[in-house]
Amino acid sequence: MKNDKKGNQYRVNEQIRVREVRIVGDNGSSVVPTRQALDMAHQQGVDLVEISPNANPPVCRLIDYSKFLYQQKKRAKEMKAKQVKQEVKEIRFGPQTDDHDYNFKLKHAKEFLEQGNKVRAYVFFRGRSILFKEQGEVLLLRFANDLEEYGKVESMPSLEGKKMFLYLSPKKAGVAKKSQQKMDRERRENEAKEAEKKSREEAAANADTDDESPANGGLFANIKGGDELLKKLKGGD
Image 1 (cartoon, rainbow, N blue to C red):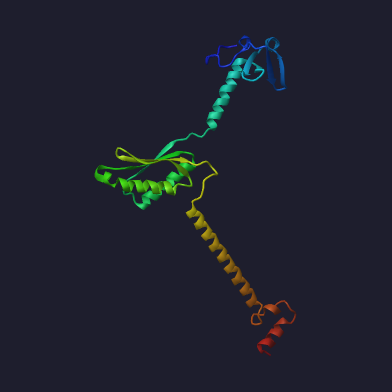
Image 2: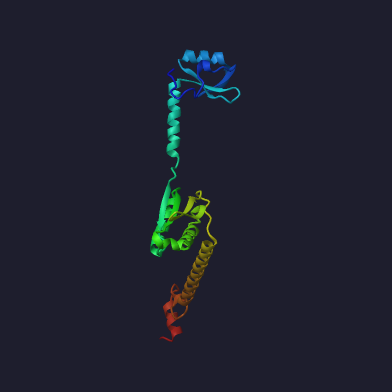
């Protein structure tokens, strides 16, 4: 067994001083006296490694300690790779940002929040523009309101030097709540679509009725001698 450079993270072999342990492996588990477990490890040329000291009895594995540490390190690395790294993205405004620039930055903020990142939006006051700090606060509050489906406000706008900050964190996937305004808009759109669909169906039904009128020969189109009957109805020879 090689020395553990990380210190006594796990108790190994003679460091395990309890009366009995539970050995786990591919073939299940069994509780045996610790001395017997040490003999088993010696016979197999491996180590007795305690992996769950708080269990009753403590849980151990028969494995080469260096291999065990490698597996643990590899598993930790894989778990870290799966974790989404959260970053803080900055959005900068001026106190008199126009609608085009505002909408452009709003779009980027939505993308940042959907990706799981935080957003730090701020208004920078240059020189005498600090007189418009209330205008900057209104802008940030509007920004937060427009992003309510994607993020939640961590702190209200606050002035720090020449900058007024607003912090937003992403909402969990699948729990974004629609604003009442958007739900009302979607309801009106759905009602308009239904009305348009119904109108088209009624128009199609009326068209079918017209086609079946004597003038169009609809009722006689598939009847033997229908053309002659149609001529008579029209006053033909």
